[in-house]
Length: 483
Ligand code: TXE
Image 1 (tube, rainbow, N blue to C red):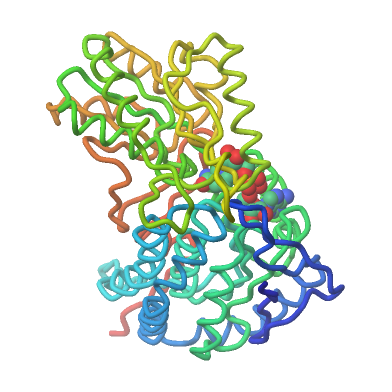
Image 2: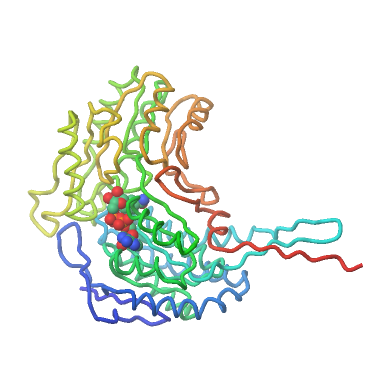
């Protein structure tokens, strides 16, 4: 069993009071590791170290910071398999997914921000008698709070631009998935990143997370997690005038028009619904199908879903592993019960999986991918974020109806449209109130583009210049001509 520590001011340390928490393997309930159960005094140490280190880091030339990102990318790439294994163990996701998505994207995040920054030109505005130079300084110390579904993917998505722009960091990963944040800390330590530039404090949200939100020396907060927690983050940080980026939940629609390529739409809808057992904020957890093809689509979709291979996270063949914990499994199952009460019909799934299996993966948090039909698009199951392998399927007649149904939730993160007519798809996309809509694809990301939600899915945008903007203060230097 591993005993993880905090990483503060360039050293691995226990929580001040020595308390620990257990990190549980969702596939078998066994303890993988202990982590410090830190408190606000540990956050204080991290914030002091970060504040001390930040001015030196901010003064490091941008070109050197870019080289740092490239060096970090190379070092993480050399640990690709270690990262994938740790992520699969911690989250219960299939190892193939952890390799393809989590480990690869974590490396790519550092590499992307390095190459993107290299392409940037200094912004200037010329006047008749003066020149204006737009300058970007680091915000100062930033707090990065991240969830359990894509642990290092989402942490590195924040760490890379934060370092690039000259910030020092106090990071808190989810207490349920601390392993890969620890690998990142070990990597930065091995590379001798200046002490205090990156600090990692493990523990619970209401203890460590809250400590970060409230700390007066932490100037900005980038948070990814649930909408309910996002409200607490905003309520705490806003009166302190901290800069805030909130990436919150989603209830995304997959809209299938009657001219869509059937096979492409089915494959896309399956991937959107069940990648990472539906535990991606971008997952398409509501499928809206145009009436003329509904019967054919539903049959093909259910067939594809019921043939997905559920298996142990470490099994190379698995397409669906566990959800994050037994507690979360209970929450997801409560939505299946609710679907029955709301008048729904289960077309496939709805039950735990792997329960009869002997061996170490017995009794894990496995749930068969579940498709529910017959519910109103206004039902709770069709409007609340379930964040598990459960999808509801609905029918519409006109495009206007599709828009109304897609927009009938408090969320506005993402969505996808499947059609042979891309112009029609693009026009329909403009009527959907979400931060991103994909046409004939899903989770197809260009890291230069703005990423973020509308309505209760978040505040602010990340990606390319938006991340660089968030993690900096933009100032103007106006130099008058001397002649
Ligand atoms: O997320 P939390 P949870 C959704 C999903 C899920 C629900 C709850 O619907 O079922 O949120 O999941 C830290 N101050 N998403 O409870 O609590 C916490 O320790 C500061 C969507 O795991 O939002 C963790 O590091 N921080 C989502 C991080 O916030 C606090 C991904 C996120 O945890 C805190 C995950 C506090 N008071 C869940 N309380 C997405 N959009 O991708 C908790 N935290």
